[in-house]
Structure formats: structure tokens, C-alpha cells
Length: 213
Image 1 (cartoon, rainbow, N blue to C red):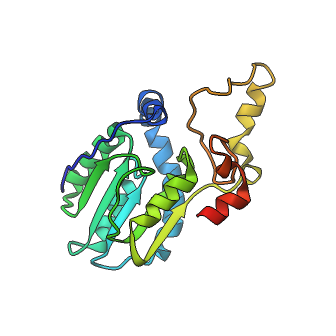
Image 2 (cartoon, rainbow, N blue to C red):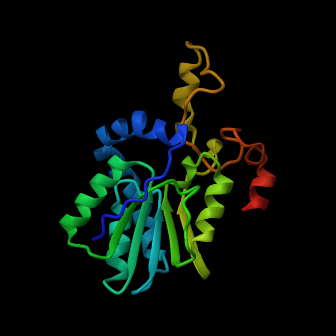
């Protein structure tokens, strides 16, 4: 296993993830992994992964999916897991060493801006793309990492109307507390429903969002 690093200058958004959210996610990892794993378990059997494929796992977090993909593509294939949170990748690297995998590398960088080469046969993301500060830029950059004919698959929540559990707690809190300030630091959880943060006018328009991808 390579332990390559490619740390880039962080945006305030990435800084917020590392300073505020990573400790919270790590504290509840045992709950999150079990829940998220149920979704990928339904999708993985249908993934068109082949022995020898070169795969990118975008927003790989603690590396569970990257490890499973590395096992699927075998020693003739390779996997790169990329995430902007260094503490997540520390866990991913430790688990990869424990699994004895030599075909899996982790890179600490922002998927939205990382300078990919078009060398991947397959690009995967499990609940990572929903956290992009700018989904259009992030998905375009993921697309740039694929070879001609490559495949991109992502697992992501549908719109808020389909997932009331994402908004119910906020609705209750707003009955008693004032709303968060317009420019307050935030991460989500988000959904790729267009206009979920509104930082980019192009993203706020669902039609533009779909066309630009």
C-alpha cells in the first residue's frame, strides 16, 4: 500500500470539515459505518468492476468502500481513495495495512480541485458527492478523471422531500431558536437536489445544474 499525500491549500469549507466535523464523525463511526454499509451492500453486486481495473473512490472517508473495491479488482488492478479529511484517511490507511492490500493508495485532497489525469476505468462515491461545496465543479472534475468509456457510479440521498429525516431536527430546532446566519460555516448533510446551499447561482437552478453536468 502506498501512503502518498497530496495535500492542497484548504478552503474554509474543508477547514470546517477537519476542525469541526471529523471529530464528530469519528465519535459516531460505529453507527455511521453500519448504516452506510447497508446502502453500498445493495449496490456493490451490480457494480461493473473487472479484475485489473484502475478505480477512483471519491470522498472515500474511512476507506471501507475503497478496501472492498481493491479486493474486487485484485492485484492486477489499483484503487485510489481521495478525501479532504486527513483523520479519516489515517483510519483508512491503518485498515488497509491490516487487510494486507498493496493495490490501494490514499490521497488527501479536495475532489473538486484536484488535478486528475484521465486514467481511471471506474469512479465511485458513497455519500461523498452530496457534500461538495460546488456540485457542478466536483462532478465535472470526477468526470475528468475517467478514461474514454469509463464509468461513474455514486450513491447519494435523493431530495429532501424524499428524506424527511434529514430536515425534521432542523425544523424542530427552528421553532425555538433563530436561524443560522447566512454565511455560517456548514457542510450539510446535503442532497443533490439543486439549490441546497445556494453559494453558486448555477447550482441553485436545477435545470442549469443538470445541463452543466
